[in-house]
Length: 549
Image (tube, rainbow, N blue to C red; front, top):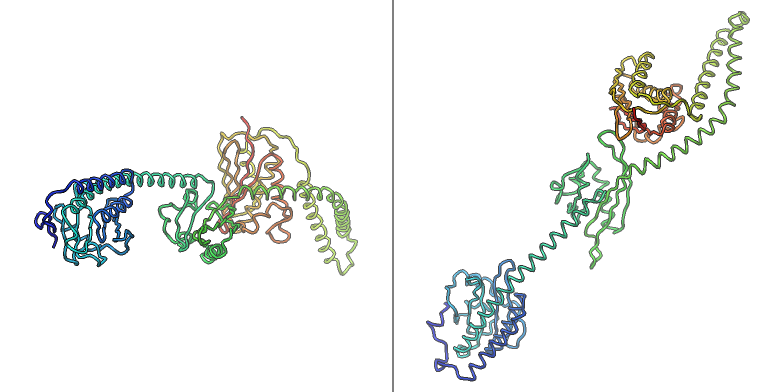
């Protein structure tokens, strides 16, 4: 058991007072140690310098410095007789027990090896001097000697004095270290917040996964929008569980390719928004590598919404294609109309002769009548196609004056209802009386709206609701023609404005209605967009520049 110095006097009882030489040596030791600790600001360096100085100053077999400091933890260091750093020197369990049971005394002598804090096995006696920090014993300096006679009053006093200096120094250095750590932690936190702010400010959707496919970063643009998910609900979760609406096999393959190859991968994707519109994305997967090993540790996924860019490219391509078809149509329409007129005239002349009885005695009179009817009807169908081509190809100037779109919608609805198309279609008009005016040719705008309405009715063979809506939006008037029909497939969305493209049965559509509509609206400085959900319906939106009333 430990015994205090006052209860068990040191060996060498003949030494009661210090001579001049010993006192000078003691003062020199304390002075040298004080100077070495003066600019030592790290607790581990304090421990190293104190342990080595005491080992040399008292000619010990070993010296241990150990302390448990707040916000830092265990700080320890030990030197052997030769002044070399020791390894595996601390009896950790004994030290913890010693802290719990230690009475508040200054110095202790241990002669029981099972109670030693130093576990090097080379010494037979251990002198322990507690380290007091902020009024509490938080550590100790343990000095080992081969024999009891090697420890005397002078050495014990030197150890205790050095311990007090070490306590003050390590206390100051601990405060300094804590301040440095707090400063570093604040800087790290500020840097983390700044990095998050930068990632959140990017007009991109960004997230990062680790090798276990756990999400470690999720920026703000991944939180907002119809497909957004709050950050707090995804950090730390498996990415395949979070992105469950995407095909898991495909997403896993994409990540595995990047983890294995270490190459950047770009993927083009399309998604359908809640309103039925198509969104175009470029998704880039970027590998993050360990600079030492080159191993891919994380994958950054960046999603960029390129819908506007794609639609602009498609719009330019569509306009060029329509212009080319228009030039072609303008050149051939007149050449086609002349033979058609001749065919129609001949068919009508023959029908007239049949009516006059010129072929009464012919056995093929019925067939002749039928064939003439077919020739005449098909010639008129060709005529309607060429008329449509002519409408499509001609430059539309017209008489453009300020018009009220609400009036155009109401008159279009009446015309559609009088045509008795779509017996089970309910027609609705939703337009206010205070809409801005639009400078346009009323007849041409009505032609475009009726073309859209006709297609909408054809898309509702079993009935439904056709809705005309007009509203002011950002300096424009937005006209919507909506149906509750069969919808348009994603593969057809990019082709619906092309001339002669139609999903209707042969003979039931020329494929020119939407192309003509597109031409009319673009000639008026407007644009047309479409969104559709299969089985739920389609909405065409016309945007026209507004003018003051």
